[in-house]
Amino acid sequence: MFRTKVLVILLAAILALGMADEASARAGMGFSMGSRGYQSYSMPAPTPISPYAAPLQRSYAPYSSPAGSGFFYSGGFGRGFLGGLMGGFLGAGLLGLLFGHGFYGGLGGGFSFLGLLLQVGLLFLIVRFVLSFFGDRQQPAFYGAPQGSGAFAGGWPGGYGASQGTPLPITAEDYDAFERLLGEVQTAYSNENLDQLRGLATPEMASYFAEELEDSARRGQVNRLSGVKLLEGNLAEAWRETGAEYATVAIRFSLIDVMVDRATGRIVSGDPTRPDRVAELWTFVRPADTGPNAWKLSAIQQV
Image 1 (spheres, helix red, strand yellow):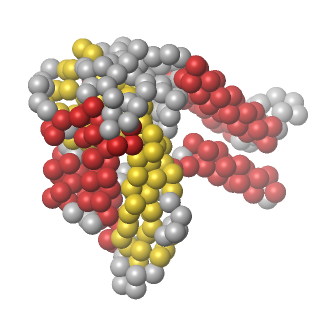
Image 2 (cartoon, helix red, strand yellow; image 1 turned 90 degrees about the horizontal axis):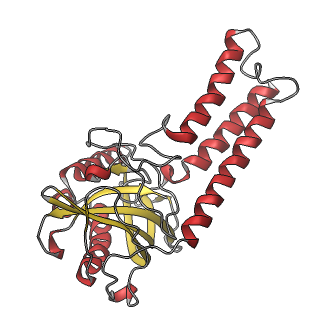
C-alpha cells in the first residue's frame, strides 16, 4: 500500500513537471495546438524566451519526417530522445511485470522505483538547463532587425531562421500586428465571440477555441480574461512556403485570468487582483505577398 501511494504521488509530480500549463485557462488552455505549415513537426528555433518548445498535441497538418527535427524533438510523444528514454523506462517496468517481478522489478538490485524517478527528474532538469544555456548564449542572425513600437521600441531580438522554406523579412508593422492579435484573440475568447475568433485565427485554431468554450459552457463556467499586456518578444523564425508566409514568435505576456460561475458570478479559479505571467510560442500565417493586417493565428505552443 505504501509503495502504491508513493508511485501515485511521484507520477503526479512527473506529470506536473511536463504538463504544468495544461490546467491553465486562457485561449488554448495551456495546450500546444495548430499548424505551422511545413514546419509543423520540426522544433521552432530556440530564443531566450523559448529555449525549447512543446510539440503540437493537436494539428491538422499531416505528419512527415521533417528536415531539421531535433535530437530531443521529432513531432510527438514517443519520438525523439526524450520519448525514447521514457519508453525505455516504461518498457523496463512492463518487462518486470511480465517476468513476475512487478512494475518495480527488472531494474536491478536495490535500484528502487523511487530512485529511478529521482534520476528521471534530475535528467529533466539537466536537459532544461542545457537547452536554456545554449539558447541564451547563441547570437542568432535576425531577419530584418526592424525597430518595433509600443512594448518593443528596441525591436524584437531573436530570429534563427527556418529550416525549410525561404527566409521572410519581418517589419515593424508585422510586430505591431502580432501584438495587436495577442490582445484581440484573448479578448474575443473572453467574450466567447466565435465570429471574431474566426476572423483572427485560422479555421483550425478557431475550431479548437470553439471546443474549449463549449466545454466551459457545459461546466457552467466562463473564462474571463483582461489586462493583456505584452512584456517581451523574440522572433524565432519566419519563412515563405508555397502560397503562404509564416512567422513564429516567442512572447511573454501578463493577463488577469479567472474562471467564473455563469449563474452566480462566483470566481471558481484564478486571482482577479494578480496578473498571471505566461510564455508561449505563437505562429501566425498570411497569404503570400499580403500586408501586416492579413496575419492570423495558426498555432500556439507551450515553452
